[in-house]
Length: 165
Image 1: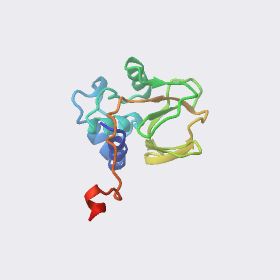
Image 2 (image 1 turned 135 degrees about the vertical axis):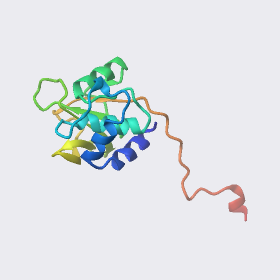
Image 3 (image 1 turned 45 degrees about the vertical axis):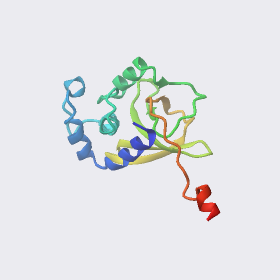
């Protein structure tokens, strides 16, 4: 699984209904719980995206339990000097208890320090949030161990034979 695969898959999982349907196909279901349309589902969105990328180490329907799994895997980061990368998961704390209230997948970061995050259960749909990676609502990041991306060759690349001819 690569960062780009996760970002691409996050765009393909486009509806609440698809999240619930795909989540409920996971075998075994995380904590044996069948997700309902009325449940909070931000963690289920992340789980479905990662599961569709063949990464099942964080399968969960609860943000606090997902954080606990990340701690066990040593991929939970709370350092304020960490600069997140696209493909990292961002965890929010809305109530200052630091238990993790919401989660999403970072799809972009710009040179000004703004991250774009794709989230399930944002206004009861899948949507984007843009904020500084240093925003006080962020309690930490989950950094799955990704495969290294293959180096890309630009379209303008020419071989010696191309130049000589």
